[in-house]
Image (cartoon, rainbow, N blue to C red; front, side, top):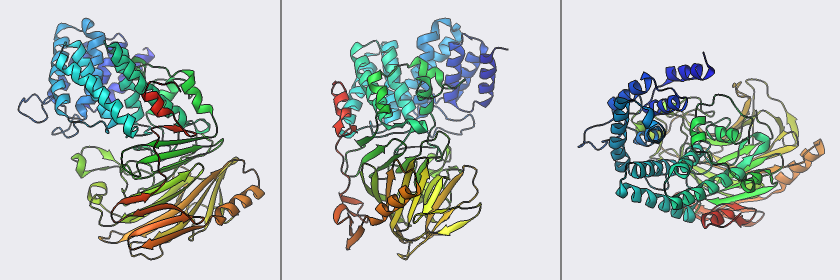
Length: 568
């Protein structure tokens, strides 16, 4: 049996969603297989589509085969993405009955797309919706929908030109964004729209190149949404592999979508990933604090953002030079799930999708190249908690990092499985791998009662070879109280000896960080200079690491240049 058929049979057995139906039918056709399976699966999709014209979800699809109702409205966008490709590329080779079924799915489905209201800040769905409308408007001669599609692309470019890419640096959704823009580029009949989609592609690929840390084989820095707590790779890895930034992998299930949306970044963009050091600054919204920064040295990467984007984000990430080591990250947790191992069905999604969510506390930060300060305020009565943690197990801040060389206050320490040691306020923890070092110093922390919390470093014997430093704001559910955490982190290259560790420790310890309070207004000073001023009770930021660039690289806003049609 041919390898392709073996792969397709294996994939077919795992299909559970309507979007996979459309994807599988497209891939069959791309392999020149026009057998009865396409008609059979599209008939199943018919049964999963809402055909009631009076329904609010008319044209949309149930997500899973066993879904009782339509919950996730994104289902129609993801399904028609491949559905239109099947129509554009293969309709002439489908039998008449299959063709009629597909046409009905698309013509009804476009109503679901139109009924689904999406803002440009919801980057991935907005761009997939735009592709669907372009494909329908141009291929079904619907001028009204075609004009709406073109307007949406203009709207996204305008929004991004003012606010930056909102759903930023996501290893999951950059795959969706780039392939959506690539499909518009490859299949639109309109030359002007092709040029505009290429502007978007240039922006995303420049973003990827700048944030790609080649020694670790992945993107670094904070990110808006990331389902892979430990490694932070996911879908974008397939893109990077396809275009030669990573070792090529075989039988990647989503390669078909990359191939059909192909747009290879030019060398002037892809070579940005080889420039060291680099400091990336970017807006990710219109409000104060909605920014992210990322420093990439020769052998480490360190980045944070100025606010908590979502219960799926990573507000801080650091990387060492290894494709196998876990990423370092901080997570604010109420589910006793520091490694993202315990997905739960959440009330806000109609108990349909299982995901690992963390708390969304007030966060503010400031990053200057290879060093940063971050503060977070965790409130037990935060109204978002019931939809994030159906069962609260406590309130924690976890620093998770690979099990590399560990130094506490300049001395090497070793933790056996099950062992933990106490960490004090202003203790300096240094993590070292090869010649790179990351220093962590908690300068302020409280439990939910405002008292000194337990802080410990532990080797809990997990399967990922990671260690964890945990601040216990509460070890059980409470209905009131506020816990705080403030920390300073810095990275350094060329730490090659015990003396290097000693000097780095001395430098970290020497940094003077103070917190001043005036009622609920808080100031954080670094070496007597105000770095941050904020009011966590009002979720108000007055002073932080303010960023104005759309996508800044070593002091130049190349994102703005790209969006205005300029060269890098």
